[in-house]
Length: 375
Image (cartoon, rainbow, N blue to C red; front, side, top):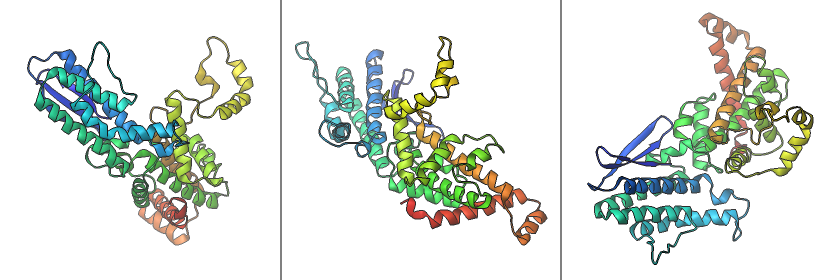
């Protein structure tokens, strides 16, 4: 989301947003001389809330909700997304108090626009109002562009967000980047929506696991536990994803399901009561042992989500790429290059790099063979 702030020295309204490589800032408008700081801060706060509400329609699209029926969560999300068209009018002609009463919108997006409009009404500066309207048009267009998979300009802040869905355009872009560098180029984190990047990474992890399983004789779901004996790895989440894929779940559904689950936890919801009950039953004895008043909840090993609920999609992407690295670690121990390749590697003095390149090519071939699971 874009954050808006006041520069009291230059009397300017500023906008800042993240890009994955650092934050950018722009000057929105000059502020009227002599304006009360409290009113200016109220304006900045309302605009920040407006941006947050707008980007939530991106991270929580209606299409990802379980139901679209009237009154359902999907219906509410769709209504909020449709409210984009109401924002300019709410800023330009906000609800004002009348007879001690004030109409308040049920839409967080529209109500934020009304609050910004009321602050602008108090400031009574036409140029400032026009500048804010132009700024918000840019912000809403950025959300719309991100929905289409275009992360240029202001829409680039989407690389920091976790989304319940994934744009096919972004998934395809991530797949091309991984084809160039199967271990995961840095561009995945600075140019691609992390949920879409994780969908592609799940496909490439499956390819890496297939290559490694064939070379080692281990099953795909035990590979990373074995690799953890070579180098400490966050093996639980990529192993979970490999298990889902082996059960026939698509990379898209596996990734978006995990991200959606984590986002629900972050929102204070309990997305899987039955699953939690099973976890509690499995941990019954351990929970009894750690049930004292001084118990540390981290000691139980019980987690509501395997992902970081503050940044689930980037966290998942990192773990999946680490899983590909883990597959290579194990494959390297079993890899039997033909004599000519082995002699070439020894002559160059870079057998480690040669093995890594050989593994990457095998993964490319496996990913190409099973490319249908990605699309």
